[in-house]
Every structure is written in structure tokens, then in C-alpha cells.
Length: 196
Picture (cartoon, helix red, strand yellow):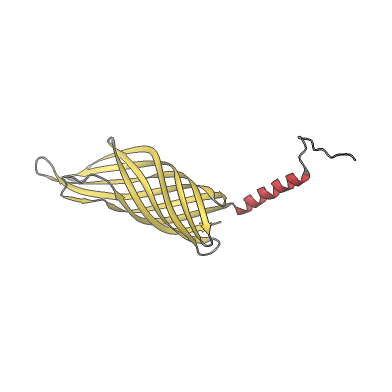
């Protein structure tokens, strides 16, 4: 009885069909999305010796991404870290007011786990942020700006209202740098997501 052999250069038709079906299924699950979130930020600036110090600010971000697999994707975002303000007495007794603020761009890899309408996610990537520090005795004051690239990460939970709309609650750790000093910024935001 003759035996059937398969050439290594000609895979069985059943294998090719399975591969094509797998690729088609993955493409069908791929999905793009955009979102807008806002919330609070808290900077770890050193308040030693200040008269007043407010580390809390208002943060927001606009982001978009693409899930090329149900559990993995990539995301880009534009963000504003919020402001931290302080006042201090200078050597001549004059009171100066200062503030720090940050903004920038981020590119993340995203991992998502889903259970029904709920999901949890984590992200990590690179951010390019611009930190501005202003010291003001009389207007307009003296400002310095520096731009740096650094590592950032975040995690959160999402809920799907419909197939195309949902919401996110997210924690992020960002960083700024000014005159050789690094400032970590913890940020909590909530917002809406639209998928297409």
C-alpha cells in the first residue's frame, strides 16, 4: 500500500486553512480607540522651608491606540500633568511665588485582561515631557523649561457600556526634570473611551 508523504516545501492544505482562519480571527478582533480623561495629580516636590506648598494639580490627557490582539495593544497620548505651587521667603525678606508644571507625549505598550464588560490593564513605555519652573517676585517672573525622555507606567480598570463606548479609571506614575532634579508625579484620571 503506498504511503503518503508531505514535502517540507508544501505544507498540508489543512495547516494552511487553520493559519488563515487564525489570522482572520485576529484581524476581526483588532480595534482602534480614542479617549479623553481628566483628574488629579500630585508632585513630590520638596516643600521644606516654604511658607505655603500645594503639590496637587488638575491633570488631563487625550489618547488613542490600537488593539492588534484582544490582550495586547499600543497607545499614544498627549498629557498635562497639572501644577504644583509654593511660596517662600528669600534672603532679603521678599516673598516669592513659584510653580512647576509639566506636559508631554507618551507611547506605551498595553496589556489587557477582560471578564465580561470589565477589564483591567497595565501599560509601560517612554514619555517625552517638558517641565516648566517659574519663580515670581514681580510679574512676569523668571521661567525655565527643560525637556527630557523617561520611562512611565500605569494601571487601571475599564468598563464597557456598549460595544463602542466605555469608561476608564487609571493611575499613572510620570516624571519631570528641572535643573538636575527629578520630580515624580502621581496621576489619577477618569474618562470615556470610544472604539471604532
